[in-house]
Every structure is written in C-alpha cells, then in structure tokens.
View (cartoon, chains in turn red, brown):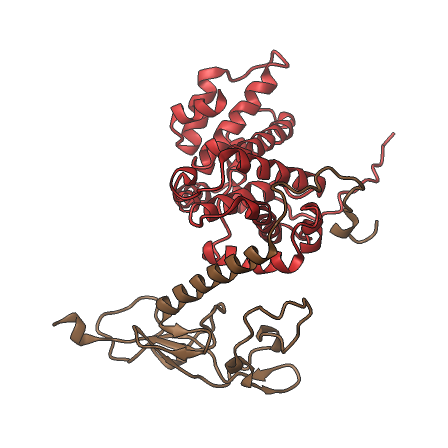
Length: 248
Length: 161
C-alpha cells in the first residue's frame, strides 16, 4: 500500500543545481572570497563601549527563536548574524538599539534568501512593539549603507553540500548529517567566539561534529576520529587545529 | 493547498519570542542616530563620486558629470511620486532632477541617465572593460549614480608634473 502525505511543503524550491555543486571551481571561489565578509575586528575590544558579549548572545538567541518560529530558511539566521557583526565592527551602537539592529538584519537576510520574506510589521511585533515599522525601514537604509550594500555574504551553509558529497557516507545518512550540521552552524552563529572564523571552517567543523555525534548512536563507523578530521581538512583546506577546536 | 504565503505563518498567541530585550527604546535617540549615520553615508558618497546627492550638483573631482537624455527606462525604475504611505515624511525625498521626465504611459524619457564611459577616445592605454565608443554604451545595473552620465577625467598634468 502506498501512503500519501498531504503535508506538502508550501515553499517551492529549485532542484539542486549540479553545475554549482559538482564543480570544484565553485568551492575554490567560495574559499577565495569568504574572507571578504568577515567582520573587520573583534569589536567588543575596539569599537563598542556599551554592548557586551552577553548582549550579543541575547539578541542572537532572540533572532534564532524568531527565525525558527517563522520557519525561515536555514541560511537566514547565520546571514543576519553576519550583517549584525559587520555593522557592529564599524559603528559604535548603544545597547538600546541592538534589538532593532537584529530585526533589521533578519529583515535583510530574509529578503535576500526567501521567496516570501518576513515583513517589517511582523518583526516589530516580535520586538514587543518597541520599534515601529517606519524606524525599521529607516535603519534598513543605514545598515545597507554601512555594509556597502554588500549583502551576498558567504555563509557556512554554502559549503555544506560541497563537503557532504565528498564524504564516504551512505546517502540515506546524509540528510540527517545535513540537519545536524545546520543546527551546529546556527549554534556557532549565536556564539561570538566563532564570529571571526571563516565560514568554511565553521561548516567543516559542523559536519565533523554531526558525523561524530551520529556515530555514537550506532556502531557503523566508516570514518573515525583522525581519518575524518584529515579528510574534512583536505576538502576545505581547513587547518586541522581550528577544525578540532570546533569539533571539541 | 492554498497559495503559499508567509502571512499564514502567524505569530502564535503568547509567543515568548515577542519580547523586549533591552528595556524601552528612545525613539528620539533612534531618529538622531539614524540621521547622523545617514548623513555620514551621504558625505561618503559625496566624496567618492564628487557629486552632491542632496542638491543633485556635480562637484570638483575625478568624475566629470553631464546630463544625458532619453534612455526610455520603464517607469518602474523611477522613484515614486510624492507618495507618503508610511507617514514618515522624513525620508530623503527623490531628487527633483529625477522627476523632470515627461510622463507618458509606460515609459518616461528620462532627463538624466548614466553610463560610465571614458572621457575621450584618445585614451592613452587600453582600458579593458571600458566601452570605447558611444555605440558601446551599455546599460548597466542601476545604482545611485545611474541617472547621471559620469566619466573619468583624464588629468595628464597630474600624471607628469
């Protein structure tokens, strides 16, 4: 008997483009340009007077909750955090503006990545109406100006498929590995410790952590410890020490 | 299944994600900071392009600006008229220069437009990527400066003092 599932995903997606995924030049280009989109400095030391690291974690946690509740695409949250960090690396900001800034960054990232983006009104409700849609739109321009309209940043998600296809993992396990890796990426984005790491390293570490975690559940381990780290390091030219740091 | 829509993704009643993180927000301070940062952006652009984007006046500098006529862009690409649906009224208003186009049905003959071109055909060295003749005038992705015609000025005196 065949079972029909009526819960069709309402979001329409393009099929994976083999030309993008199976060509190593794409991966090489991503590795070349990813550094351009890193925040320019560790801003708690050199730029921000009012904002503390725990406040970044608060706003990041809130942003992740909003993205999850609104079922945003996985890339939206890390991309929004990239905008937030790049803005804060250049503009001293009082903590009372931080939630507005987070909302603006989600607004922009959602518009870039989603077919049906978050609305300004909805985001304002999520701030408990502490900001108005008009303010959100005005600050959108400010943030765009400070980011030089350079929004198509490379995120760890851009590397996931490139890494997965090179791993000797059975294809039925891949979707679970992918899902776990995405969760690790989101967690890394909430933690300032990882804000200055290149996205390829976050992706490599997240895939590695996903595989290690899943292998503990079953005894089928085609790749273990060092072999896994070496293979991952080769794929993205990640230095092994950095990768281990993430895996740990 | 109805057409997919984010609006269907309602905010759940009593969602704990709806919260204020850092106390009350001072709208006045937001406004002041916004204006100051925007002014900084405008100033930066002014220096970058030697063009005053507020008054639409070319300034002295590396770029020579001149008006170009009639590119026949669709109306879509023009800033909207004096429409103020957000009630703010403090947004930077569309420059008057952009609104001088003669209104027709779908298209406007723009009075201003822009392509980036070398100033003169007697360019000293080959400059890859720069269209050489006026036939080569290409329409590019619109940007802030696209409603003016800008050309990089060749200043020989500066090169060999």
